Length: 379
Ligand code: PMP
Ligand code: GLN
Image (tube, rainbow, N blue to C red; front, side, top):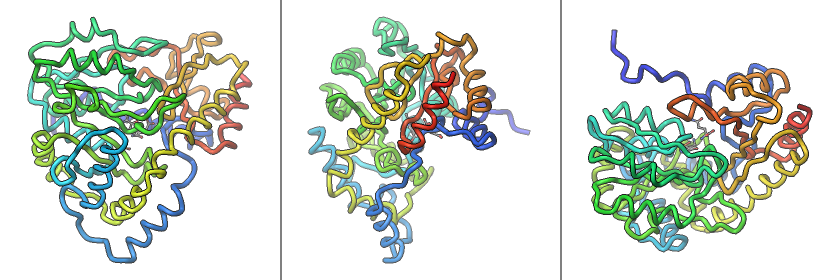
């Protein structure tokens, strides 16, 4: 009856692998979500907000108190000034913020450069808005951009570049050098940068959390997306935010107000109070660094190749030493046979070709990681 706008899009690999894990009662290290609860203090704050009557529409751009808390974070942590009134919008999750930013900028025929493997919402969101995703492959093991390739892919139709650091699925964090090169590449163009920073607090080994807009030349053209789901162990709450200079944000809000209008009020009330203590987000990096180290140490000496992991809560493990299967085939087989679910990387690429690694989420209780590692070591 209708002709599909997204004929090549099936069900996201996250749903596929979680369903498979559930069917086979496997340990789910596939879809990225914690198997522990948010802090009880935060849960109490949400419950209190519900009972205190914060149950009607929040303002369209979000509760001012929460926008103020976000503005304070960007100022104190990143030295960036975002006016809570005009430059910050609360969204129903990071995905919706990404979609709104793409819908705000991309017109029919516009090209959007994405680095692959890429989080799987980018390309369909670009296409649904008439744009053309232009993939730029990140190569193992460093997964850093090849800037000559990036330059060769930019045309006068390039409207946007999407950056994701810390990166899902590879766990890389862009060094200052790549940030500076990006600024030089977009200088003098109309290119808008969409910076997906949902893992901004989850970086390791002394790397300080950072924001792409700190790079000189980028702030004025960058939408920054963040998600409370990652930072506060509450992925099911689907609440995030976008920050950008007012001229960009005014256009973003025209889309947001008709996509969502506003976001769950009691959660915003609770997050505003909870975030007023910066330790609520400043300790997240060390919390995950310990889990990363535990998971890696449990796998030392196994047949898996442990790739580097500078940030995010995903660990890549290489399997070429013991298997030449396609990553989708191996991920399915491991779920069924040893009871550990992971995410193959090939669905995050346009050509559907993986590079011999699987992604494992370590946002799990220690006992879950121990159990999973025991099974993975048995291979
Ligand atoms: N971007 C990346 C890179 C992610 O991993 C996620 C996690 N799902 C999102 C965006 C979306 O976040 P949310 O769940 O808040 O929509
Ligand atoms: N961001 C999560 C991941 O990468 C899950 C996202 C989703 O399920 N849509 O695993």
